[in-house]
Each structure stands twice: as structure tokens, then as C-alpha cells.
Amino acid sequence: MENNKEMKLKYDKAVWKELFTYFRRFKKDFMILVAFMISLAAVDITFPLLTRYAIDTYVIPRNLEGLWIVGVGYLILTVLLSGIVFLFIKHAGKIEMNMLYQLRKDSFEKLQRLSFSYYDKNAIGWMIARTTSDAQKISETVAWGLVDMVWGFAMMLGISVVMLIVNWKLALVTLVTVPILAALSVLFEKKMLIAYRNVRKINSKITGLFNDGIVGAKTTKTLVREELNRDEFGEVTMDMKRTSVRAATISAGYLPMALFVSAVGMVLTLYFGSVFLVDQVITYGILVLFITYARQFFDPVLELARIYTEMISAQAAAERVMALINEKEEITEGDEVLALYGNHYDQKFENWEPIKGDVEFKHVDFYYKEGEYILKDFNLKVESGQTVALVGETGSGKSTIVNLACRFYEPTGGSILIDGKDYKDRSQNWLHANIGYVLQAPHLFSGTIKENIRYGKLDATDEEIIEAAQTVNAHDFIVKLEKGYDTEVGEGGGLLSTGEKQLISFARAIIAKPRLFFLDEATSSIDTETESKIQHAIDTVLENRTSFIIAHRLSTIRNADVILVIKKGVVIERGNHAALMALKGHYYELYTNQFVEEGERDILEHYGAKGKEVSNDNLRTA
Image (tube, rainbow, N blue to C red; front, side, top):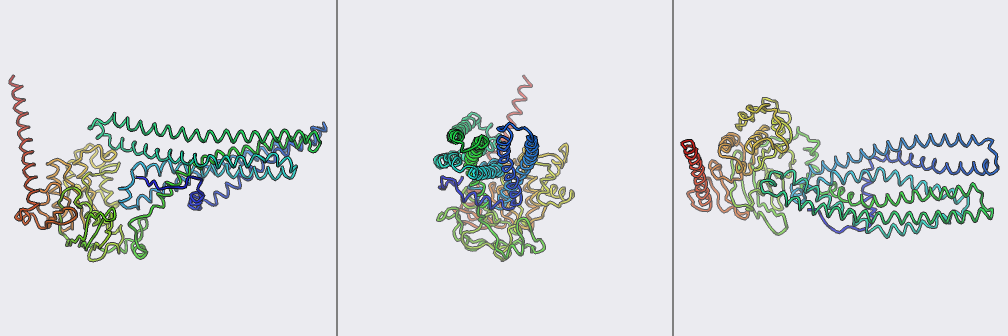
């Protein structure tokens, strides 16, 4: 779940400072964009000065001789303005896309490096929203907000300087409403930030519901949850609608008030300017200049007000994306390990030692929540080539032992040795490259069967892929498909049966010939015929490999060298199948109960089939 810790309910400079520090790689592009915007502001400020010159020099004296020079000046400024606008739009768009690319790239790379615990604590929708809508919101606001902000401040500064030089009294009249606008900004700040944070938060929930609805479509239909899902989604989207309308209403209230204050400023300029004109303090040209500048001055003020609301909205997104990018990795490598083995994206394969396969747990403690131990002083020594089966009820610690052995998690106490050396002294990638892992619920990537098997070894030849498939008895069903190994598996392997997906995941796991093999109830969700194929594959694959098997069907682990019966993180029985059956303890009870249940099921299936045949015969006789 998302971390809901208290955050400052105001415009947070620290967030934006961190964001701009993150974007310092685009410093040169930003500087070029700033130059464009200052140039644009300078051209905008020059137009009224040219108008004033034309009025006082040619219009009021009714002398049109030489007025064409002013026309040429307007033409030059217009061409210059058009060129600058083209360049800044092109450059700002480039910056936006580069920033969006960088945010998504870094966010995804961070997700690749984060430990399993991060995925346990955060919903999929939360992560998707960070890398999609939140990242886009930031890039749009920073790129285009910067454009408008630099232009706005340059315009306001330039206009203020020119007005103060021309007539400082009338300038002060024009600028008197600026402090009022500043006070309005402070007043609306807190409400806008709260509203937009809530919008981004609910947006993550919607993304999560979309993900669950798509990924769990089959489950939805089998459980007839369509109406319940619709109602749940309707509640969240209605909440999104109410929250978004509230945020828009607050913004809508801010902008008209700012517009009203700016209008007051223009009225004051017109009134006092007219008084000064009657008193002959200023000329007609200066009056027109100030009226034009009053409008131009408050245009960027209103634009800055809009940008301010956008930045408040984007701040919520920035906090969340930067929190992901800055998320601390729970499993990290020391400097010496990185120097020797490399990191995730720059691996030094030449330094990777061959692995024998000895695994030892020495006084291992582990907890997810401090004080609530899953394992306490756990000890286990597995010699190379041995097969260890883990048996026990749900929550006993079987998966925890496997996850620790794979270094998906690390012990909170004690140590785990691979070939006699603490695995923290070696690279995660070194260990994971020597692991074959098959899950209870197999996951395939979109693409072909061949591509999915090759994921286990990216440089594998077609011959190696076929050999791996033959080893796990997958080759026969694959070649019967219309396109064979080039058959598309669909998203998540949805075009194949569970058993077929499991066989392909086995082939993918063994193609790199790993020394350590882990099976997490890999045969619990498949039919008996496929289980028989996989069991044959397991016997072949596990030969001379160190392996850990989390067993659901105890009949699949009778050949294991060691069977551990675990209860609440403690090994209560240990031995091979024959020894544990002779002991007639907890394992014996589990095995015999399951044997009876499976025997009854086979009998029912047998007689159910016979009954169907008899029924069909009766129908034919009738």
C-alpha cells in the first residue's frame, strides 16, 4: 500500500529543488529555452514602445512622413516573434519528451532493482500510475510551465523597469495590486495542494482496478463478479469525479479572483493615466503605452497563477515519482562486490566463479515485521546434488526458506552460505544466473514459445531450445501446434493451458543448466497426466543438481534425499520418505490422508466416467 505519511500541505520548494536537481542533465536545453523566452519577452515589450513612438512622433503631430519606418519595424519584430515562437515550442516539446523518457526509464530500472518486499507492499496500480500518468504530469508541467514562467517573469520585470523609467508614479499605480495577488496565492495554496494530492491518489486506485479487471477477467467471470466489480469501480470513479471537480472548483475560484484584481489594476492605470494626461504630465503615447503594459503585465500574472495551480497539482505527482526513484533497495551490494562482479546493467562475467551447489543456513532468523519471526535460529545444510523437499501447512515458512535461499530476501539474522561463502559476498546476479525457478502459477511473457524458452538463456540456439523442451516432455505438444515453436502464447500465456504453460516454464528454467533448482508447488495446479510428464522431467532435471521442492502433492517427493516437515518456522521432522513413514509421525499422517483423498478422487472419476458410458448406452438402446 502507498505510504501515507504526513507531508507539508504547501508548495514545497524541496520537492522542486530535488526535481530540478534530477533534471540537471537537461541544463543546457533549459538554458537555451530560457534564452528563447527572454528574447520573446523582449520583443513583446518592444511593440508598445514602437506604438508610443508612432503616436507621439507621427499621429499626434499629424505628420505621416516617415511613418513607414515604424511599419518596417513592426514587420521585423513580427518575423522575429514568429521565429522565436517556433523555436521555443519545438525546444520545449523536445525537453518534455526527453524528461518523460528519463523519468520512465529510471522508474522502470528502479523497479527492476527493488527487492521482492517492495512488490509485496505496493499495489500494481500504484506502480503503473507512477510510471505513466504521474511521470507525464511532471514532464508537461516542468517543460511548458518553465516556458510560461520564464516568459512571465521576464515580461513583468521588463515592463516594470520600462514603466518606472517612463513615469514612476503611474508605474506604482499599475503595480499596486501585485501584493493582493500574492496574498490570494497563499490563501488558495493549501486547499489546492490537498485537492490535487487526493486526485493523484484516487487515480492510482483506478489504475489498479483496471489492472485487476483485465488480469483477473477469467476469475471475474467464473465467480460472477461483474456486477460487484462494476459497483466497486463506479464508487472509485465517482470519488475521482467528486475530488477532481472539487480541485477544479478551487482552481476556478482562484483564477477569476486573480482576473478581477488584474482588471482593477487596469482601471486604476486608465483613471490615473487620464488624470496625468489632462494635467499634461504625460503624453497620449505614454498613456497608450501604460494601458498596453497594464494589460500585458497582468497577462503573465494570470499565466503565473495558472502555472501555480498546475505546479501544485504536479507537486503531488512529483512527490510520488521521486519517492519511487529514491526508494531504498533492501538488498544491496557492497563496493567490493560491485567492483568484482559488476552491477545489474554492467556485469563482469569474467569474474564469476563456477558454482558447486552447497547451501547452508547458519542460525538464520527472519521476520517481515520486527519481533514476529517467521524463522528463528534455523539451520540447514544441503550438499551439492541433494534434493530437499519442504512440507508443511500454509504459513509454516516453506516459501520463506526458498526465497531466502534465492536471495529474494536476506536473513535478518545469521547467514546463508553458498559453497562455504556468505552469499552477501557475491553478486545477486551471480546467484540468480545459477538458479532455475518454477512457480506454482507459471507466467509467460507475450511472444512465441521459442522466445519464452529463450528468456532462460538469451544466446540459446534453436537446437538448445528444442533440447530443453524435449527434456521436460514439452516438445510433443509444441510440434502439434500450427506454428510449432513460433506459436504466440498470448498475454501471460493465456492461449495455452496451465499444464502447457508449466512445461514451457520448466524448459525455460533448465535451458541455462542451473546448478540450483527451486520448485514452488510446481505440480499442484495441473492435471494428473501432465503431472506425470513433469515428474519425469523433474527426475531428469534434478539429477546432480541441488534442489529445493515445496511440495503440495507428497507423492512427487518420495525420491527426495531429505524431507523437512516444517511447522511455524521450526523443523519438526527430518529424513527421507521411508524413514518418515516408518516414524509414523506428522509426515506419515499427511501422506496417508492425502493418499486416501487422491484414491477416492480417482475412484469417483473412474466410476463417473463408467456411469456416463452406461447412460449413453441406455440412450442408444432407447
